[in-house]
Amino acid sequence: MAGRIRDEDVKTVRDAVPIDSVVAQYLQLRPAGGGNLKGLCPFHDEKSPSFQVSASKGLFYCFGCQEGGDTLDFVMKLDHLTFSEAVERLAAQAGITLRYEDGGYNPARQQGERTRLIEAHKAAARFYTEQLDSAEAEIGRAFLAARGFGQDAAAHFGVGYAPAGWDHLVRYLRGQGFTDKELLTGGLASDGRRGPIDRFRGRLVWPIRDITGEVIGFGARKLRDDDNGPKYLNTPETPLYKKSHVLYGIDLAKKEIGRTGRAVVVEGYTDVMACHLAGVTTAIATCGTAFASDHVKILRRVLMDSSRNKVIFTFDGDAAGQRAALRAFEDDQKFAAATNIAISPGGMDPCELRLAKGDEAVRQLVDESTPLFEFAIRSATDQHDIDTPEGQAAALEAAAPIVARIKDTAIRHRYAVMLSGLLGYVIENQVAVRRVSQLATWQRDRKQQPEARHTRGQAAAEAPSQAARGLTGPPLNLRAPHHRVERELLKLALQYPQLVAPAFDAYGEDEFTGPPYAAVRRAIAEAGGTEGADADYLRRVSDAAPDNTTRSMITELAVEAVQNKSPDVYAGRILVDVRLQAVKRREAELRSEAARLGMSPDPERHTAVHGELWALQQYGKRLRDQGVEAL
Image (cartoon, rainbow, N blue to C red):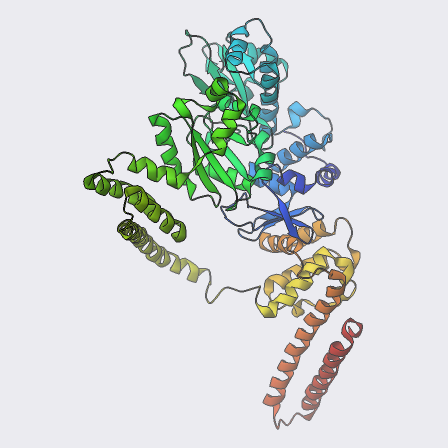
């Protein structure tokens, strides 16, 4: 077994790799105020950004799904890595050599499976690109040249060549220290009668990279007529490669997509190359599968989904291409961004269009795209002769359900009016509007009925389990006004400990009325308090948390922005407000006890209660008059 990575090396990795640079490899980040950054959460589907990163503290937190942690936690959760694999990946990025408890630096022995598979794919990509210069690969170079791609283009996209023999890659990777099991697990080799053989043979090969730029698979195009395999052969599903989670070219396009707010979705590897070389550097493609919901999630995170942004699908102008465009309608409304369709003239794809008409034609194709809703409506009405009443009625019945499925009511009404114009209902445009409204209501009611039945059944099923867990009464609202100042003080204690020390360390747990807040206060105390805060302060507080719920709360409070732009002034006020709330609660308790005592025969207790009440009232007055000086 691999030895345990030394603690000091783990700390070095955490300190060396800024969390914002790691997160930015996966999603678009923008300023959130207070020195934080925000983006669309990669852990759950959302339309407005609730995911925040604090670069100064090395933490992330999602206020929507409550996922949070440090740089290592982010990589572990998003890429499903073990702790060791996450440390190894970040150490490799930072050029840090790790030491293990049992000594040694042998990466082949120490690295986790995913890291090993990444290294194997990296080595395979080098092998394939070197082979593109071989005499055998002339057929591959000719294929590229015929499509307008020279040596520089091939190098930019990492295009390579897989030799026609049975085990050229297998023998090469064995020589690099990789095992047969690793080659089979990674999809680089297949089982043969006498052992592993190369999966790709005699083909042009494109490396498929994830959003961070790591090679996780390959797509291979056949070149010879005697190759009986499919035209394109991709890496099979592996621990690294899930075709529904991959967008080819996203590593090259993500920065420009984020900068311009525009993404162009094409159908193949050569189309991505043609678009990028023509100046459309936001082009991406799926890898042998239809554009689906998982692809939507990847793209939305890079786009920082917004109604100002645009996703453009390009399809061949033939019937199959138009059907593919209409299928995109289903995914359109998963974007806040506007979705457009670009249909190439004459059935040409972007690669063919660039060859026939040049770079400007590719740019024009994208710039002159049509809104998807309009394209879908026109495609439906074009199937009918709208010059006749019968054709108009048939076209209305074909197009109205499409308009009715538009979720935004304002946009739906505008397209209903547009449909009226297309059908010639100039005077009677309410005909189409009413029909669309009818269908939208009917579709909504059909959807709600099964959902209502499911909800009732689910509630009945959950009721016993909730009672068994003691989940009765309304949930605790930690953002209620009476909890707000406690929350603010804990945020200050975690984010700006020097501003509240040493006064904060004298505050008791009973001054925090929300039990989760009291647990955070206890963790701060066990970590040495605010006065002892240093570079490892937040880590110690997190380690002192009794459970994951408290640990998540600590991360949330450490990332959430303090509600004032001048925390040095704000800190004193919040310290006083929390103490004043505690004084008021104690005063209320004492008044209640004094009322119960009434004419009690216990004069000593009566005197003590009134004495404490008077002292508290005086203390409260000093707090209000003198502020933090009275603490």
